[in-house]
Image 1 (cartoon, rainbow, N blue to C red):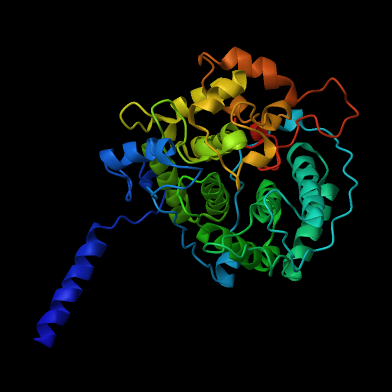
Image 2: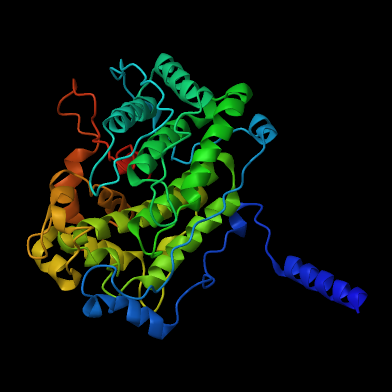
Length: 419
């Protein structure tokens, strides 16, 4: 009997392996099949309408439990033998210029002490992230090899000291990585990705395992609902890592997250969890769409993979762009559609009728330029270009360091990441 059971189990394992698809190249990535964990039609509609029955944001059944991703921990030898490639498009040499990058690298933050109150941040972490914003920009558009060597020295210093090794996770829920810490880690990763090809084997041997560990913690992070904007940010960061080190399983995971998001999206292009969040509803919805757009744009530029064509009963990333554009044009009207009371996650910065528009006024939605550049016939194109066009490659002041205004969450201006 035991022998029979052993043969049966072995047979099942072999069957699973036979039907599981190995991802060896971009051509093997699955863009079309329905992702696992997609909700039924009835549960999808319950998700869309959850705000109607909830007394306040999140106070409703969970439709689509949050989940993390188990990123591969590569061995040191992998980083020695495999060169890195930048996930970003090749910036034209003729458009590069001499930047005045003279900032000193920040001291590595080895241990973080978080203030977990909603909206509070660690000042030193912001200081470090601002350095990497400037560093990434100088490396991306500058023409100085000396600058690149200085930037590499800073990254190597942080890696050697195992920076951020402690204190980056919050204490609640499943203890995900704190949002501000994800932004900081992404700024380091993005800077590394900009100059990926310049690292030699010995440098990759030091930096690779360190970044791998940090991105692995981010990838593992999850929240109550999978439709949380922070969950989409983890997939964006995981994608950059996957493209840089050629971890195609990580790339596929980010693709699946985008497909699931489209399944969960309402027909009008809104996301059902973040739009609940009172005075921050349209802001967090804008964040959600931004991460999904940039994932899809990066993939299209780097691999030719087209997630913009993924459609679920008429819902696609195009619907999401439309909702965000409408929320910029009429923030009060659009926010009031789905927003409800949100004492712990939105009320502080605005109200349902008068939502926060900080993300609109301070060029935090410039990623829409990437969308209209890819789809110039979109009905919102002229409006978006008029509103945000000067944020990118503005040469009117040649003495200004940033000709393209950086995005806090994306580190660089989105048009320097995808086009």
